[in-house]
Length: 250
Image 1 (tube, rainbow, N blue to C red):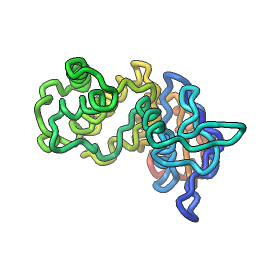
Image 2: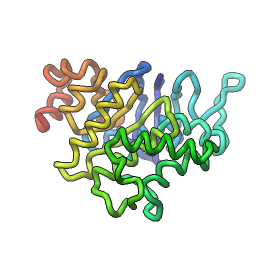
Image 3: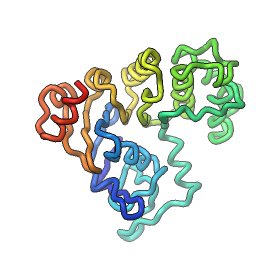
């Protein structure tokens, strides 16, 4: 479902990604861990072309992301075509980015109606079903400010799912939450993984990674230092840098 070949990303003179190679199969969950500044979130943003890569390629479900290839050369897509690709990739951010002036239901139906041009009654029916799945059926008419952080994040997940994505990206979805709210969001993500959704998750929740992930990827300094089975990597890391990082967390 996802293949990264030699992905590099610079911000001016700062090289944030230094040749990332990664494969995630359909239906798999890959968790990205590592210290702040290691490039995890930047890589995630490259996967849906919110950031433009400087070298390498990213392929999602067989489609080259953000570029067209002609005669062996890559040409960046127009913003409109890149946005069309992005519809198939759901993303949930640290901060929920809900529209504060719209109700929960209005937040969830916005993209299906405005972007995918779905009939409103169909979008509403699907939104109510998704809100029920994330345990918020009773909050459809509430505004974001009336919800807890954990509830807002679950609305953000429902909103991403409303576009029926083939891939879900989560960028530290629980890091802005109070500890007692984290569990509700992780429960929704567990159910999503169990349903067969392909997921790339940047997280510090090692228990979640051990339990749910098919692949654990440790990044540092813009490179993949070590990757493998989560239980094996967490209990027996091979690289000294991985050992040092995990010793502070586990």
